[in-house]
Image (tube, rainbow, N blue to C red):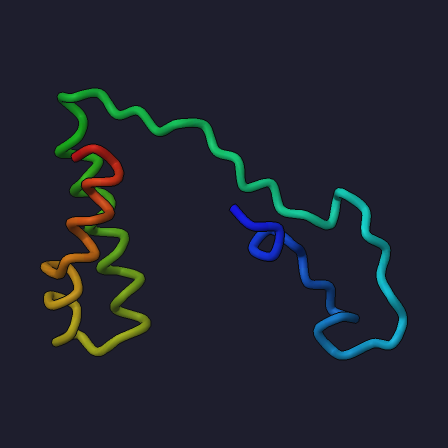
Length: 85
């Protein structure tokens, strides 16, 4: 992952401050995750949970009639393929 995507944007930077903020390591986001492992017998429940949570989030962002299109689209297939499901 690039340094740009990990860099924390401070409020001062966002507002266009002329003072330079410190460049400590604590200003970077830790984006390293442990590998996700789901037992074979729990994959269906996990997939169901992901779908339910995503429907709830999408319900707040896009019109209800567009949710099935997103849920049945290629992006969901890519997400579950990446998760090994």
